[in-house]
Every structure is written in structure tokens, then in C-alpha cells.
Length: 88
Image (spheres, rainbow, N blue to C red):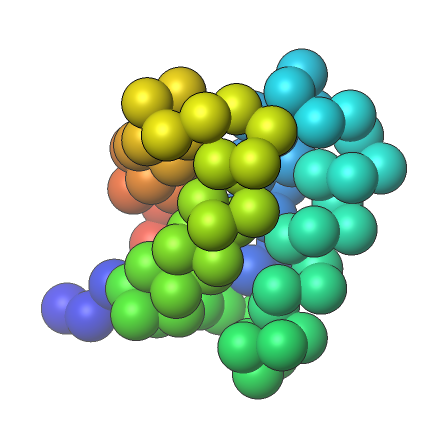
């Protein structure tokens, strides 16, 4: 079965993890803007889309958090998304 996660749940998960580091508004705005830039639309995201989104977020985060902390935060986001239920 292919990997599919609810776009809303993915973004909510990312926002919850990023907010303590960059603030709620920046977390929501960054994730949504990267989705638009990557052409991610619709109710569900595949693994490639999640990976692309996390990659983009990581590139921006390194400025705020440094390389090591960014790697840890991106991995936390990845695990959180993996733990979400499959989208229908």
C-alpha cells in the first residue's frame, strides 16, 4: 500500500513541532508556502511530497537552528508524520 497522509494532519504535525522554535505564525506560513512552491495540493500527500517538504523546511531551519539541531527537528517531524494514520 502506498504511503498517504492527510495534508492537514501533516501540516498540523509540522506546525506543532516547529512552533516552539520559530513561532506559530512562521511555522504555519513556512509550511504552507513550501507546499505551494512544491505544487503540493489536495487532501493527501505521498512520501515523495513529504520528503520534499521536509527538505525545504530543513534548508530554511538551518539558518535559525544550526545544522545539528535542524537535523534533529526534521527527524522529529518525519517520525511524527510516519506515525499519522494512512489517508483514505
